[in-house]
Image 1 (cartoon, rainbow, N blue to C red):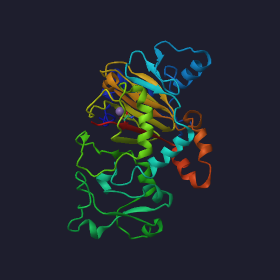
Image 2: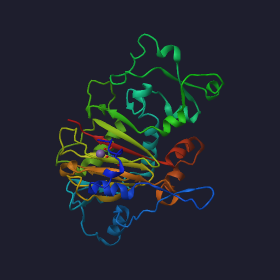
Image 3: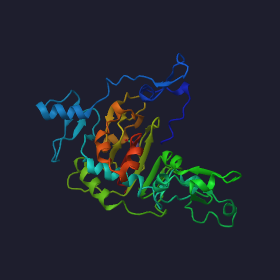
Image 4: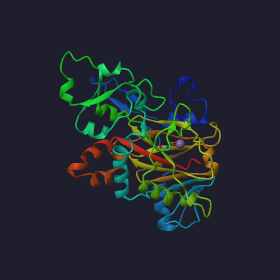
Length: 362
Ligand code: OGA
Ligand code: MN
């Protein structure tokens, strides 16, 4: 479902969804005029992107809503917006406090990628502990030659990761010595290449399903409470959302999430609760067919999206994140992460977006 990015150019405009992905995606224009050949992001027309922050502002000011957008008539402590053509889709702009945003950014980088939770790095490196600390300490991840050919070198790895060998963090200075032929990669690079981690019931990407036999921890209590509160506007009356799994997506500049459906959960009347953290992004919400022209919507840090019922059958994706100062809209995070101990989080989030999407599986 997430592998839809690698299409060749011939296919790139075959559907309305692809066309929109191409419109918003980051491309560089290579200017050959200057001798430095500086690459410039290609300008993009954002005039058709729905901006729920300004929808909220004008709704609060004069009770006005743009055509096609309505407000949910249900008890919640701030307006919940709906798209009239996409029943089951809900947008709650800026609902997470700055403190909550910072808390979940920190957890996403420190505790969420910890084993037994899996990440995209598992298949190659096996479980990695304390990646964020290692990156902060400029450590290097090194393949231990002698053990990688050992007898049961794969015994520590969950199924599906049988090719993993034993990797360990070393001080950067240790491995830079000449003549060292071991394979190595810096923790900073691994952190930049972290694309997903899975919490609670583990999603098995190769099978596109949840593998309940894999070791896992319950969704952390605080996240569970938050997800239950946020899910309430989209829940069938009288029922409480049960968070059982979450996928955390990490986006750097140029990273995208191709159009997909999340259809591996049993009961589509329950919402997916999707929280945005860090740099602003564009979300595409299509229809049930890739031929349907998608809505483009800004996602900012602190926004929550709910997709339930019919909206669960709608293609969606993220073709663009903005890391430049004007568009990222993370000044509030820069202020909050200003103390010495938090600068490492700021350094990461200045160029990144994190999405935590929480699911009830059964
Ligand atoms: C997903 C997803 C959207 C986002 O992970 O399934 O749709 O906002 N994420 O990153
Ligand atoms: Mn999705």
